[in-house]
Image (cartoon, rainbow, N blue to C red; front, side, top):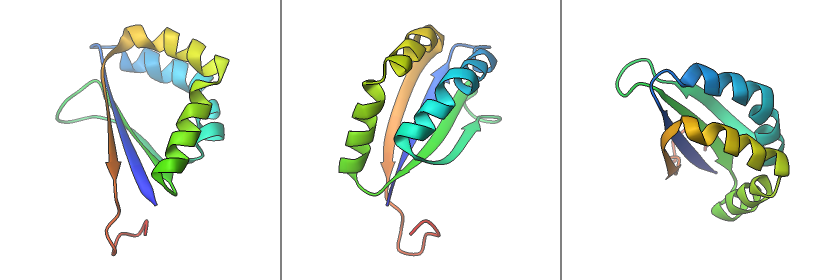
Length: 104
């Protein structure tokens, strides 16, 4: 298993607006297409105005296939157009579990 950590930094005060849009229009679609949502978080200390979400995949190939399928969804592209003005930056990391990680 690999884990993708996606961190989005928003303009100050935009996280509540993003979360409302995401819960209404993005979450179900992402879960259906990407599959394995491990966690979704907002920052409380350190850099503020961020969301961090973790997605599990069997491989980088699976991740690539699922991300391409998500981008092919017209509903997802419409959602992105709505949220992009709220964003300041995005970061994606691929994390590999250690041999003793509970995720395996």
